[in-house]
Amino acid sequence: MIKITRPYIHHPRYRPLIETISYTIAAILLYVISDWLLQRIELHVGHRFEHRSVVFFFILALLATTSFTLFKYILINQ
Image (cartoon, rainbow, N blue to C red; front, side, top):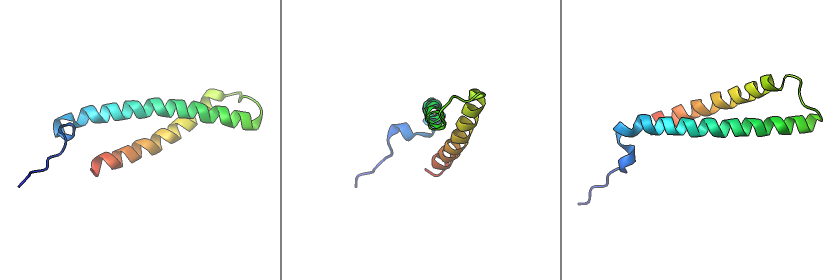
């Protein structure tokens, strides 16, 4: 009988590495998406916000909280 094993990358020893890479890629993507959303919102409103960095921070924080919670759920329930 053939024994089916999980790919070597799923070895518990590599879990911290996979989590670090996943969170880093997610952070880069969230930064780009947040900037894009802010530009679209400003285009819709018709002018740049006076406190643009604060709005950017709130968009980024909302997306990060949501996606990292989802990541944690996915990684725990593998």
